[in-house]
Length: 141
Image 1: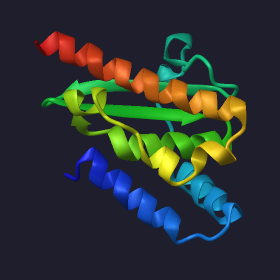
Image 2: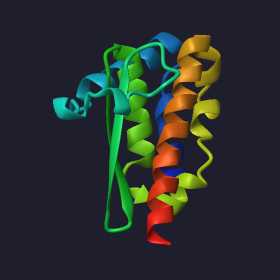
Image 3: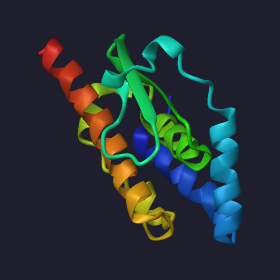
C-alpha cells in the first residue's frame, strides 16, 4: 500500500491535470459521488464532526495496526472532501496518521478556493481523524 505522502503526491499530480477550479470542483464532486455511504447506524451525534457547516459523519476502526475510516456528508462538495481525506489516511498506520502533514490541501490550492466555513470544516475533519489515530496508538502502547 502506498504511503500517506505517496498518495498525497498522486492527488497533487491528479489536480495538476485541471487548469480551472471549476474542473477541480467537478473532480471533487465526482469523488464524493463514488464514496460509499456510511452505515446508517453510524449516523449518530457522537460521529458528527464539530466545526463543519454541513453534516459530516466520521467513524473508524483499527485492524492489523491500521486505521480505517468511513465518512459521509449531506453536502456534495464536502462529501468529495471526505473522499479525499479517506483516500489519503484510511488504511494507514495510526502513528503515520498522527504525525502526517496534510500538505496536499495547500499544494492543490484548496485553502484559497474553499469558503471559510468549509476550510474550517476540512481542518476539523483532519483533526478528528488524527485524534482517532492517536487514541488507537495509546491503546497499543
